[in-house]
Image (cartoon, rainbow, N blue to C red):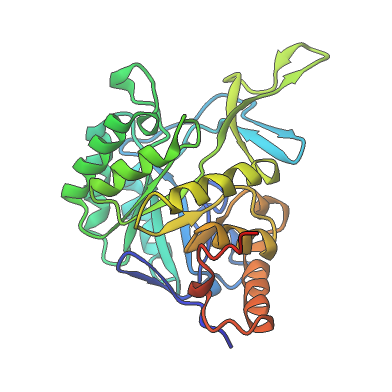
Length: 304
């Protein structure tokens, strides 16, 4: 049987299949469908320093081969997570990783600092696609300067594995990847959702209360694969790839493009057991091709 272990910085995963933040709750919601211990890791729901109610409804809309969402990081805040949710999930036989969001750099730092004290929380994923309130609402991840600054400041207070989640809504994603690597990121995850919009033609109203939202699902996969491939050739740190992964073939495609590990997101809503099915498909592929370790596939495209 082929080796499935991969490393994200100093963090060893039992296999490269993980679930994306915002699509898998805190893992407990899926425990009736799959053995959570089979996963390489679970990225739990986005967590902020203070509680957030999220955006008004409607905040989800189905599109061709995907979905739009504008949930707005609804959560009860990091203190509630530490006191009430962490005790329930800390003993799962997989890595539980918190997605950290904020409206200011100070928010990110304070939230990360609280999580750094949790023994069984080996990593965080810094979501820099959030709007920077102090800078007029522009996402941290759309500017090299702000991406570098928030990564630098969080790195000072979080000594464990630091993963930075990149926004695809930029001119050149490799520039952002390089600056967060320079400021101490152990890995990057990409891509987050694309900015999209849908209109109900009968009412002539936007389908989301916020007008625009984040597009995810199979429709974004070719763009996501391209961005992973570009970043793979721009940085030395590991990449966690995501964006429209529905089956094991999609996962292998991301690995060939340069992903050390992958996250399954939107498809968890379609098939709650999809992550385990994808893992089994990867195992079968490696055995069928007599590949000793999944690491041998990373970035190994056969160019014509």
